Length: 299
Image: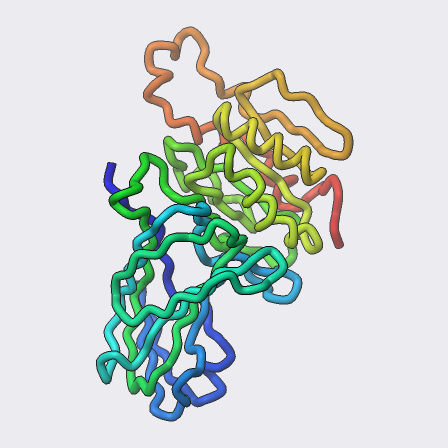
């Protein structure tokens, strides 16, 4: 299996960028940054694995890594003068105390995620740069520890609607997701490359969002339905599940079953294996998921 890893791009702009009169040009796959006045040592941009949504108004931008595992970080950029930026990878405990800091001046570096780290962030630091073309950061498991699964990754919020008070969290199956099946949903977060061991990390990332949103956990395979159910039960939110009748509503949570009418009947049994599992998402009650007739408004 090819180790594609997670790709992180420049998705928002720090206040320092404006403070020193920077010029930015945004392209599909790159950001061009120009500033001859910004002092050395200032942060040009930063990415966080953990955010506090009420104040940051953004969700995590980095994949969730596993303690004790080694990863290859690849930084794709060009800068003039050469060597006039560097990266700083900061590992923190749950209370925010720094565990370790790695200074990166090369474009490829191997880093082991500390066993006692809870989160990490990456800072892009100025060192008298005149211009910078930044494309991406790629984080992959090292070839020595490569496994079949990739690192857990939560997407940024897509298809946003500032008026909606619900957040739709889709547990993406290993078979993937046909994007057309969720095109009508608003305020969507995709949880990619997850497994049962990632439960606590998913909860830690999403709990801050409960202050502003009611959460809908959506699974469209048996495994995804069970994870959606477990997350909703633990966080007393709503689970949207299919494929399994053994799941029963627990105290505090809401359980919705969808897609049963799309299960293949005997006439489809020969071709059912060719049908993509995300087709069940076409049976979702989009109006309710987008906040219409909301079961528990947070506003």
